[in-house]
Length: 264
Image 1 (cartoon, rainbow, N blue to C red):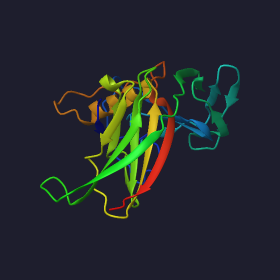
Image 2 (image 1 turned 180 degrees about the vertical axis):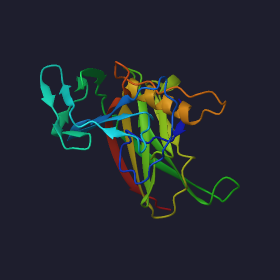
Image 3 (image 1 turned 120 degrees about the vertical axis):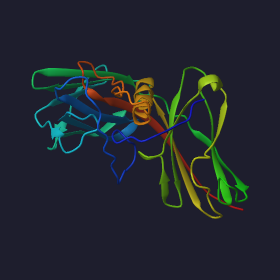
């Protein structure tokens, strides 16, 4: 089981009110197309952002691409996303189904970029457990929370966890939490969240467990490696699942949410 805490400025689930700007050395001097797309299981709006930038994470040099053709295919039907300006494209009320293979094609300025992915199945949260700890060098006194769920045995699984403790959110770009089932494939996973602040009595705690596809997980691992590079070498761009040199990622997530109140 692997635990990663990474800073991510794009493709984040949930609302992020802050932005971290990171300049990445390009492999060449040409500007690159960046495609940010997140498809959620169930009926949701599917949003895609297409820009051109010389910096992967996008800063003030990022230029929206407003004339792109953005098409999602579910194996039988093409769905064309409408342009809402400023490089934003949307498919309203699309029902994404677990186990379905999706292809996203972005055509712009004579270039075609294609990414594929399979929507994972929801892995339900079984329990949010908690245990009181006294104040120590490493923690205030309070309740350490733990997410518990049964990992499916049929395939390798990749997860992201988001937590809200009495209105304080964990799992944004500055403390993203990822894990895979590793050697625990098919077993019960009990994952204590030592990296977040302890909860207090009668706090409301909400956890979201999001399953993602392997390409998304690999992409996020690349972002983590990029941000934490400390050897002075130019960082490599995170591995995108788009072809033809596009940056960004077509990410697919299926999520379950559970809430409790900490009761002494």
